[in-house]
Length: 281
Figure 1 (cartoon, helix red, strand yellow):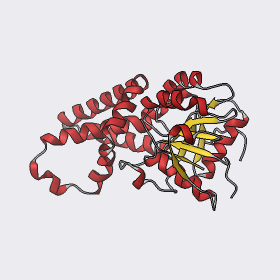
Figure 2: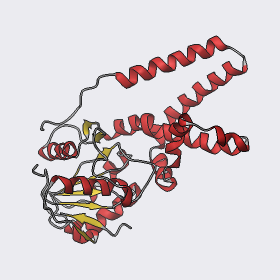
Figure 3: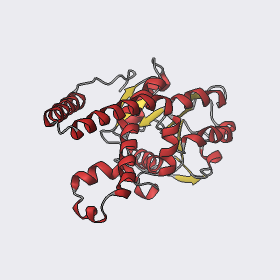
Figure 4: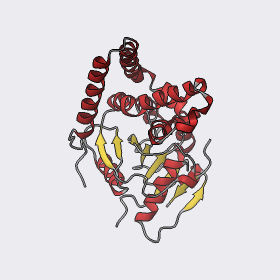
């Protein structure tokens, strides 16, 4: 399969960045990968993928901007987008374009050693540039080639929707995990698959998720409030020994989740098919 980009640079070889590098390398048989400084890696790259923490991306762009080739596209794998669209385009030299990406794949584990070339298979990937352009079409094709399902959102809508389906679940898992400090000491003996399913994401990287949640604090405020209200309603029904009210709440939850999970949404896509290391092909 012919690669969408002939030369890419991945800056930040953690789980996501490493998986991008592995997957892209797998598409191009015989490709030679090299590890280089970030400044060296971006030279002549058609696509630059920022896989650093969101807070480090502006500094990274400032450092590599002199080496970016005219016509190159800069993207990223960050979990928040509005702040990046406000900051990064103004740091790029003429002829270089920023288009945000958010592959919604990953793990509570971290590091290049956990990366794998099939990480993006079937995963949603949001492209946060609306409208159409040849650069956007090409980037969409790149993520499809890596196995992702591509959706287009503007940055604000991305942050609002990610707050519901990604960031709020992490907050609830963290809250529950911290509350376990007050659980009976032997309760851990009874933890089964349901416990593991619910708490897995509470093992995620604290520094990264602390940054994600604070960066998206405005969009996260409404989901947090709604979740607190619903939890309060359930708590009151339990305290009142109102089994019928609880049954209604549980049924409502099941129905909502069923509609949410099975709703058929067509892909809104464009036409077309600190961190010293980087990968360059």
